[in-house]
Image 1 (cartoon, rainbow over the protein chains, first blue to last red):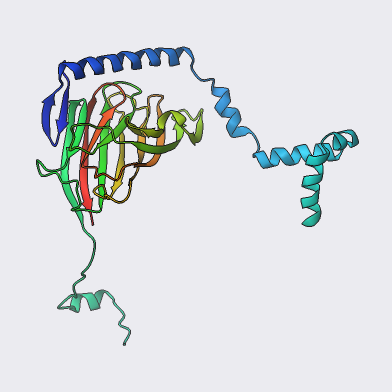
Image 2 (spheres, helix red, strand yellow):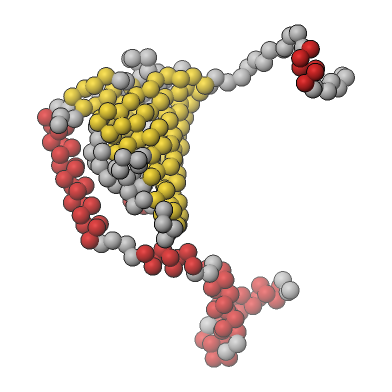
Length: 92
Length: 206
């Protein structure tokens, strides 16, 4: 079916060039859609994203794990000390 | 000045109300109804359409836009030559939240596929419409001072999509036409296929 523009309420038929351009665009869209169906997103990605603790909480858990292990404290010295400095400055 | 308590009896006894002046105006300009239309365009200067310095802000409302093609995205572009070409340079940003009907997923995020960086192509307002008979999208686009020859032209759009994955999508987009030429026409279209049905209304705000 011939396409048209609706300009200020007036129907204006597509030119042959516009028809060809839109045919090509629709073919490309259909091809892309077919590809996306093949590569459907895995539901667990979004489910995990929503379920993970906040990044700040994750980092805090990491710091406490390091703080309880002398070897890790040495290995991640700069990270441990930077957080420790803030904790010391603003104690509970 | 005496404090007057207004109650039902007081209102009933009033014989004259004072007038309220200097309020802004919100003026309906034009409604276009899609009917398997590839594009819907509002062009300044004909068929009662104004898109010039008559108003400092314009509002387009989209009522139940129905896509002919499943998963197509509702987009727009601007023109600086009264609709001869829709290719005004623009930069936009876009993010959304979505929630699937079966409650299996809900998330929000920035969508790099929907934004534009100094491009002349169309910009997304409402993404991934479903094409079932009961699926559509409704929303709005504010366009600020399109006639300005000093500033770029800002716009803010968004709305609610009944998406192709049977989800609600809460769309948020904004941007600016990066030109100091007047923008005097706006065109709406889908990323693929026609706008099967739906209304777009244009209002002027002063």
